[in-house]
Image (cartoon, rainbow, N blue to C red):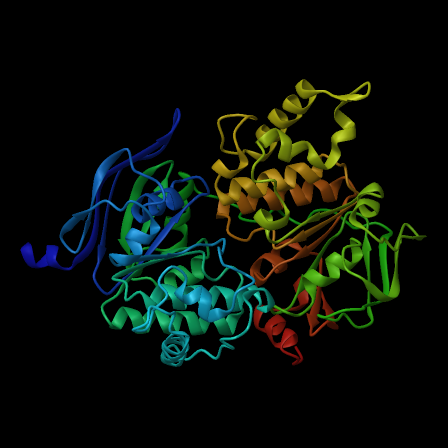
Length: 503
């Protein structure tokens, strides 16, 4: 029995955490074995991130004990945790974007020479050695702002590794990575595991969980409801454990026929990098239209150009045969366009505002009483959206920052639905949310579709596009490769097309 306990690098016993009357964690017991990958799953709001933040010292737990390598620990903050062997790579990256890679890698721990001056040569040498070890090619002098989200993600993982951590927590690390980058990440994780380092892998992507994890634990409503070897469970059992019931249909059925052309994009090109080149397509009334391509293919840039927040070099956009070449987002909104962005915290939410503010901000004119804004109207509308979206919160007055990522996404969607749009553009709507929340958002898409509302959906999840969309446009390097119908194509075909091959 003692030998078995020696295999445990991290042990959490009786951890509880409440925010006001909301009990987020309820006496959690969790063991992580040395040199293993522990998958941590659960619905948005189940308590995964809160438990990790209590472990990392970002939050102070109300009850319970944490043991690291057999010794009780209670970290005062993230820096304390890092220095004692626990690192965490957050889903929402927190980096100094104006500084270069080396500065971000050594932030808070700059080495100094004998004169007390920062030793930049040593920093560069150690950074180069680290990235070579990880098989990564990185321009060390490049400002973080000029790097893609995926490159910044990999740098953050490298930073965590550089602390010689005993335990590394990865919170949705693949949400912005390409297939090749995911493969590289998993290669790195296996290398670290073989070195005796333990990893806690938080993800909603079932295929990745089964590919990389040795054990899987599931949280539901603040309780740890299951821990099993990955080899001894399956997808259906995990979903049932997460939501407390069997989800019969993960995606809503395609049961409507698109109408006439409502949106026409003709020969659209952009003035600045990353470039779009001669993009043309039509979207029909009540249609869910998919956009697929690898990171950097131009999918987000296409939505932003249509919405008026990226400069066109050429081309036209028509809504119901009327020219709509927007010069700003306000014009697009006035004509019934909505854009649900990929980076919800960066440009989809007001993090210092409450649910009411974030639910109503896109359509304030609807809540006027005379010349003033009516607070009761706003609160009533927010309460209604909470019910419709099944948002986990205490009420309209909750701060948006207190919600989980998935529940924040529901607020973003609800905010735009309040504008009663004609065209809704979704950029990675399921990023970082659980299987039940995905189902709810896709259900909303189909409900809007039945009302004649057209949707354009960007997603890196091939299964989603095939199940949800009626047509899919394949993009590569800012150029349309091909248009496909889900019933005529398979996942490997789509991947080949976005790589420049043929199906």
